[in-house]
Image (cartoon, rainbow, N blue to C red; front, side, top):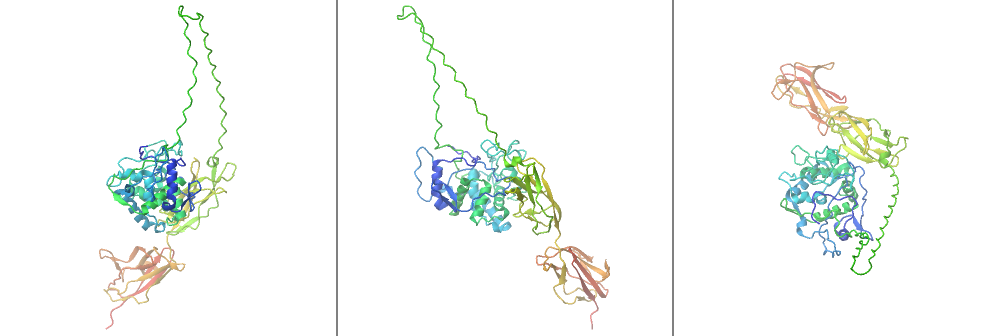
Length: 568
């Protein structure tokens, strides 16, 4: 069968007998965590349960993918008669187009900095890119990593695939009726809306750009603190990309193959896959139905002189038309759990408050219920951080999380992590696949605080008139005994302990232009809770003066400064 690029496999579609045999042969040597059962089918040794928290269920909408497998270490098995083995044997399979390979490695480096606990290998991105798009159609990308033409999956209209109505107004997939998976890593638009990343720094998030798509795939796999060095967690992440055990095994096979070694090839020259799960090569042909019987042709009436009887032969009887059997009425299809949901109820969510940079101690929990108030299990609930007024995220760095309700109909969102922006923001809970009112929750991020300030030195701060203080004021902030980092502070030279008005004489700071300044704002403690003030100067006024430092949270420290003539 000719290669059909940009198309992806249907979840659960049958593969050829040779593909199954090849998978079984690969299991022992090329698929970590994979074994075979007595029928030669692959099973995962680690937990292969899909990640129920994946946005929209999966990244790809469980649509089509390529089934070609990497070359075997052992000699190729003899193909079954009449089949074409979907196993490419040749060094070309180890080659990855230069720009595509660069995108995978850059994504790995970025994730190493932003999510070091994920331990994402670039070979995993390469394995997924292989089965999703054949490495962007063999590397048919421009110098910036954008495909020369869009790579689109099948229309997700419920005909053999999931039924996903349009979510992007055709912006990415050109279809304003239904969604389609898009780009080298085949994201559906609704997932790209929150998982998309700008991997090449051009200010755009383009699913057709391999740098953007590879980085987005890395973040998608690493969300919720998944660790790719733990087989069960890697399996769950891969299954959340496309929820198929056959898909998992194919990706793991390519991962192990790429880990054994690969090399760079010019863009546009990568090996192209030729089999996907819609292939019918090797399958039994559809039986041809027998031709319907026809009545014998009407015999001709003999003419006089022809000999024989002059009586015409009787007309053949017309065969009776068989009665059409009545079609039995189909049994009514029972509603899905999602279709029975009438509303969402709060499940005793406590007040959501956290200090900037901290994890919220409380989690949002909702319950899906029928009109009669009965809990509904196995329903997907999506939690979304609304708007751009906050930099808070869920654990793992994402702004969207989808969770399946448990047997009690309850869905609990991952923990919220406060960013540096303070104030209120909204988290919205909705039922995936149902048009109905959601629940909005208000979360509050309070500024970082300090309750204690102390000087890091007890050296007296003195200066002669018109001179400068030898020591700079340095203080340390703590909150409940712990270091108070990134806490906002102000420093003001005041008139007296009872009058916090800014003094107009005595010691002063200098601004960038060398002008006198006696109040400093926008100060922040460092990672160790330390704040070091700029150098202080003195005018010609002698006496004792006060410097007051205040922080968010109420911590206050007053420091004494003395200006006196030098003793002879």
